[in-house]
Image (cartoon, rainbow, N blue to C red; front, side, top):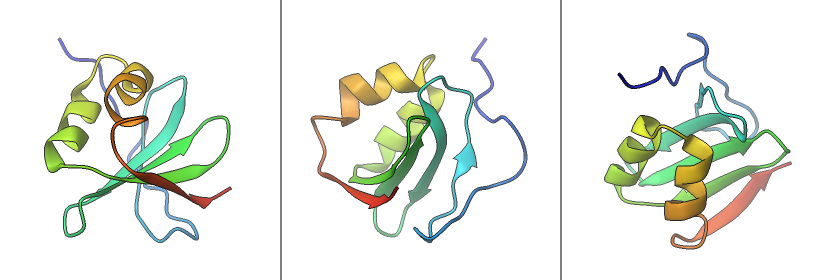
Length: 87
């Protein structure tokens, strides 16, 4: 059985402008995805909000991963272009 990813029904949206869903992760706070631009936005527990240009399947796989932080480290961090959008 896949662990539940959402920690609540609310969404986070700040000065970055993208809506993110809170996630149950020790390293990620919230995750959002814009299918119009294929941009994945991640808020990290240690601080900072980053966006990555990724295919849609990467967002689906991230949200279905047993460990979101491990999936990010293995599949996204050094593979897809990313940039900081907020502290």
